[in-house]
Image 1 (tube, helix red, strand yellow):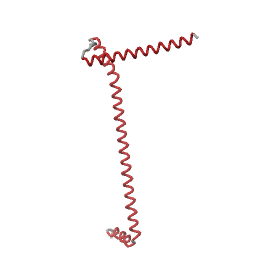
Image 2: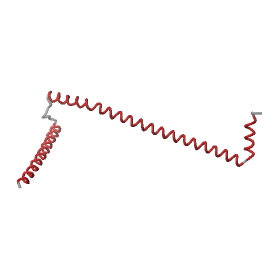
Image 3: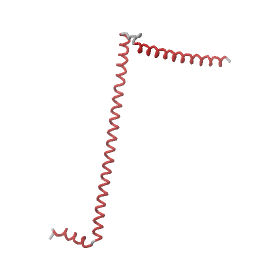
Length: 132
């Protein structure tokens, strides 16, 4: 029975701690909002606070700058790969269209030659005309 009571008391204590920290944060937000509306700053930062914040910012920059640069390079690489892929697709489409045009032209020539034997005969004679 004691184990059950201790578990309940632990849960109640944790809930009170969470509730207390939440209540404390709400109070801080309220104080900040009130001071901003009235224009009075009750908490002016000291030189030590400013130095601490500046140090934290410098440490953050040291870590964040390479990370951001890496992300930017990844974006550029992704864009270059996408452009290259699009260019390859466009070239393939152009080649396919050219092949279709050549096939159509060959088919038209064969169709003309087959439909009129006189034209086919004259073509052969015209090709050999310069040889004589």
